[in-house]
Length: 441
Image (tube, rainbow, N blue to C red):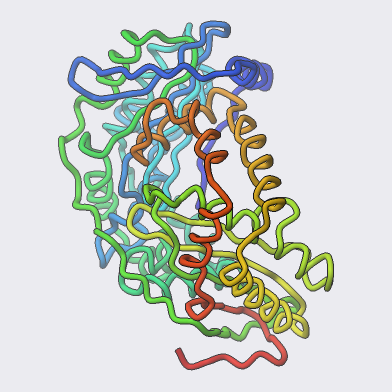
């Protein structure tokens, strides 16, 4: 995805990191604005600075079928002029305020991230509001940003990782929006009109799908007023969400010929929803198999055999689907062996489970790494929004590691036996692999 971002002054950014991350706990308050919009807040008045995160559920999945890429293009245009300011005037006003606005899109959400000083807060919020509620979408800006998107798509078409990702998504998700790139295609983006961009904005920006998190020098009362100033004028409802995706995952191998010295393989099978009672057990099992650090896949594929520089697997719960996915890259004459080892380790985990030693090492890593996520007001604001979107309780940060530690060896091995299904493991390989016979699935 493309990020349209500006950086705040280095000293301010460094100060924001120290502001909350040094604390052992994160005290979250639930705020309801006068108009009824909910936001989560972590107050910290040690630095005159606030990070604000706003997300709208739906993302590029809300594209109309004949306008793929419209939400992505629209997101890139939000800072290209708003209200009575064209793109240049908007950028100048933001710079004068020493504020940072960032707009982004993914399959499941469109995000607006803002950083601003307390002394300039009112002016920064007023400017931010115009980009959310009153974007101009001037034709020259549409044409300019569309050109950037098309250039990116042309580059993606030569990148083995992007080719593999798009092919894997199409295979697994079919006609669901997840099955094609949210950026669109060269043809679909070239055909987009300003009316398509306006329709995408209307589809995304609505109060029935908004989530807000804030961290910094702001009180609950002030945050409630700001939330209403930013969002109260939005329509109540947006476009319908696409609904659950039906996963079409069949075991086997798909090969996409591409001239490159190293083949790239994505692999996966159905995963586990984030709200499943067994999610933490599945997370631990997956970490042992292919997570950061001394995983089984790294040991067997890289350390023992030298087949790759990196291999990993992770749970990927999305709003409308859940998948267990991984990646490996290897020389064309060695990728077949790497895939064979991965299949074997997949089956071993299902059949034999993990050891008590592996379980304790995984718990130590997962609980120890968790606090490192809370470095900086901006990152914490994003976590607050993510928790809301996943319907996690407000005390989740305080209880998360307890949930990890409560998982037993019996839990992990039971879930591994149920979740890991080698017969459903699909590989999509991009390159010129040797000794690898694709199937016809």
